[in-house]
Each structure stands twice: as C-alpha cells, then as structure tokens.
Image (cartoon, rainbow, N blue to C red; front, top):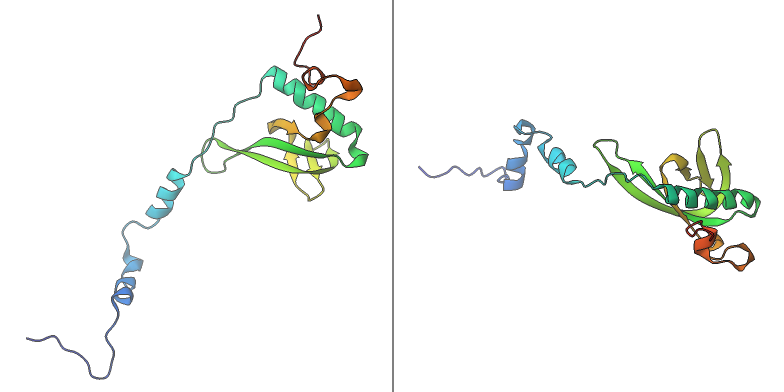
Length: 145
C-alpha cells in the first residue's frame, strides 16, 4: 500500500521527528561525563625553599610600597572543584591591600590572590634591586662568599 500523505497537514521534518524521542535517551548525562573526563588538570608542584624565599622577599617589597599601589603579576594554583589537580593562573594588576587575616593579596579590580598557593611574583618593581645589585642577588639566589 502507498504511504498516506495528509492533504491538510505538512509532513514533520526529520529533525523534529528525532527530537520527540530525546526525553527517552538511555544515557542522560553521558555527554557531560565525557566532557568532564576530557578536561585536563595539572598537579600542584609545591614550590621549593628557594622559590618560597624569593616570593616572600618580593611580597615584603610589595608591602613596603603598598601605598604606591605597585603593579605585579602573580602566579598561583587554583584547585579544581570536581577532580584532583587544578590549574595555574596568572593575574596582573595593582595591589590594593594585603588581607593578613584571610592570607590574601587584593588587587584594585577586586581579585583576591590566596598566598598559600602562590608560586611566583613578577613585575617591574623586581627587575632592578636596590643599590644597583643584580636581580639574582636581590632575590637571594646567590650566596655571599
């Protein structure tokens, strides 16, 4: 027998015909799970003692000049909320204040940087050290002989 075609109603497009069965998909959430699994995270590499000393010296210099609103770039680790690891984030801006009770540095744009996950601090302020000494010596990378 030939297929019936209604003279009053238009034929349903294939895209709409398939969409009517979507609520009965057997694997709901499967695509989200696949996307989450594909998302990459990094493990946190705890900074070494020398790196921590450099960061502490630079934070000290920032705090000494906090009234000048010095500009700096901070690299810190943000743990992932859903899986192990996280991501390293770099944020640059002018320092507004140091929140000692929260252990955070706040920038003028409102960004708060957690100091316990801080890996590096960079900026023009650290390019030249006081009294004309070289940067490595100012950061404490060389020892006195």
